[in-house]
Amino acid sequence: MEVCYQLPVLPLDRPVPKHVLSRRGAISFSSSSSLFGAPDPRQLSQRRGAISYDSSDQTALYIRMLGDVRVRSQVGFEPERRSSHPYLCIDFRTLHTRLGCGSTSASSDPERRVHRLLSFQRYLHSSRLLRGVPQQIPLHILDEDYTGQARCMLEKVGNWNFDIFLFDRLTNGNSLITLTFHLLNQYGLVELFQLDMVKLWRFLVMVQEDYHSDNPYHNAVHAADVTQAMYCYLREPMLAKSLTSKDILLGLLAAATHDLDHPGVNQPFLIKTDHYLATLYRNTSVLENHHWKSAVGLLRETGLFSHLPAEDRLNMERDLGSLILATDISRQNDYLSRFRLHLDQENLCMSTASHRHFVLQMALKCADICNPCRPWELSKQWSEKVTEEFFQQGDIEKKHKLEVSPLCDREMNTVGNIQIGFMTYVAEPLFAEWARFCDTRLSQTMLGHMGLNKASWGGLQQEPAPVSEEAEPSTACADKGDAATAPSDGSTATTAGGTSSKEIPQGSRES
Image (cartoon, rainbow, N blue to C red; front, side, top):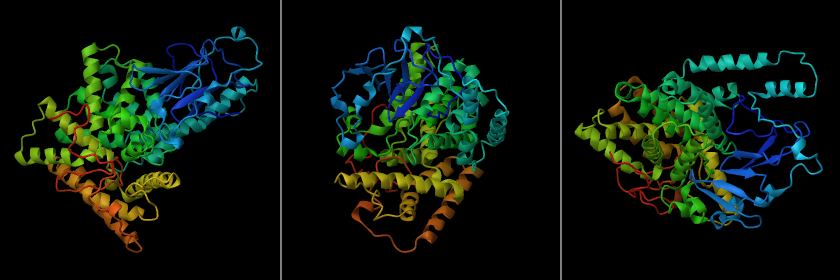
């Protein structure tokens, strides 16, 4: 029997049978279970990831990619847009196995709903009840204990040394949902914007599900970490006294969704493998555009802002995209130069909406790459995770005889030299300017941690790493993460995919 970690029971848009859901990449399908009984084919329509499978039509897949756009493909025909490199292709045929073969008529099955449970303990409790075994032990005690510890951590969520790894364990892998919901509620945004609690929770559940848990770095825990860092920046005096409630809502939502459905490979990889996303976004801010559109898709699917006027909804979606697009590391120098110019001229006016939005963009950029500024125990873990993700990409490229992307060859690079380069050419210039803007205890603490972490990595270097042209400091890895490098003089940076940092991606917003 397959064990599922599930979340609290929530009303869905329409009743669906209680069945085991299995996630495969961006596609999900339903399988019958002897525990829950055979599903009703007429009612089976469940969304997981970017694709929902409707068993009432065994020959159709509905692909949700651009929010309100659905592309239908018939059995035996794989869309050309997904004709990328073989290991990224998805075998659609696995979705068309008939369900409930040999079971009784679907019409005789009672209507059932999906029950999402908080933890393994509650899952066991539910299983015992379904099997008719009376509960002997109050299994919820462990859940309450862990929930209590998580609640205690949330009381200190504004501390810079917040341990997101511990918090994720205490919330049973639901750190992104729990943290984001807490922050939105703490700011009073749920009540202020009259957000439907069921829709909001469903939105956050889908956001967390659409992060790939098998990515070493770009997963839901990273999104939760960025959201926590964003909250720390929103509390800085320069922002706290100027930002509107809408600014705060957008900042937190952008942090939570900024890497949504990240495939675990960078933009140059998608371009050189002719991935459909690279074609769709014309090789420009490919991942960031996909994260943005995926977030918009979930907003529309859950109807979180459906009660707002149409113009307000579109403005929210556009501003959300502008924030997410700012995290494109290949445009680092563009944003940094503009930020430095504003600071030199002392003309940042926080009463101006466009200037506040630009500061939010810079705050999200800092939150996205703040790992070198965390205490060593946390920073080291993140450094190892992001480097492993790059090395895994390099392994795939070697396996398929592709040119290995910069910094992705585990035989030519080490965690230490990658991190030292990243701090020197990307993180330090950005956080130095942020400290000019917010000269606070937090900004100085971040610079102090980064200096210590850089020295620690230098001390761990056993011998000089092999030098290759791929790893020159002037080359950017063209994907946000802690292992990219870029020049700090404001000059144009050319990515490994051939994209200039001065190219303006779709939806970008000038201050």
